[in-house]
Length: 333
Image (cartoon, rainbow, N blue to C red):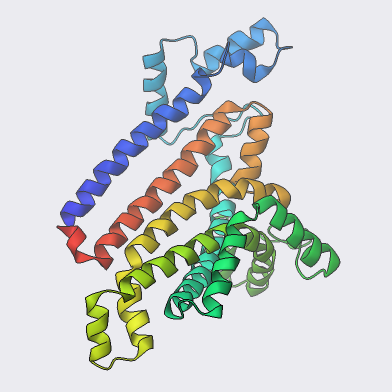
């Protein structure tokens, strides 16, 4: 297991190094003078020179990258050009909102997707199997922004069952600790805040989870069907095991590798899709912040945001790789 950990850790370091190069290049790939682009066409020459000096753009490229990497290792992501706040401080406030939304959406996706996929596989070619496949195809084909607007209109405006914006009601006073509202409300003993936060999460999480839910259902069905045709399944049936035990204990466990792979990939897609969902539901997370940073040409903020999302995606991939080893001992060799 230690060999697996060391290999995955080295791979993670290489990935993160490549990510820093890509993020650093965002500013330098801009056509023209990056400082001029950030400040706009009406910026005075003195302001452009000041920004170039502030960002170190007047130094050789290798020295700029070395300085950028050194600051990253100290946790310094620079300051936002728009608000002059520390970018690390903004991320520590915004990223928990996006991770909370993504985690709940992924939970919905796994719970419904895997359940539907397993039942469809165990009842292959039945009406239920066809219904699951049609539903999965519909879910994959449905744009997130369209579904989000439909949910917002029907359940938010017409039926008034769910709130339509924000993480908490505007009149509710609560000071978060880690900015993970669900976690902070529980450790603070504020069950009312937990319920309100969960109520606000349901609609955006449902909108965000539709496509991953459909993909997980399809992959689960295909993996379980393939496993049910293996020789050890025939042996289990010959021993008189019930179909429920065969499907859930033997077939699903063996089919977990491709399912875990697609779940890990869907996490990254959820982080990307959260930008659209957060914008529609006015969710105060990374998506709305990055969109605002792009519109205002706040490229240091864009750099920090992309790096944070990439780091989260890399850590999830590392966790999935380690789960492979736990599920299938042959991978440890």
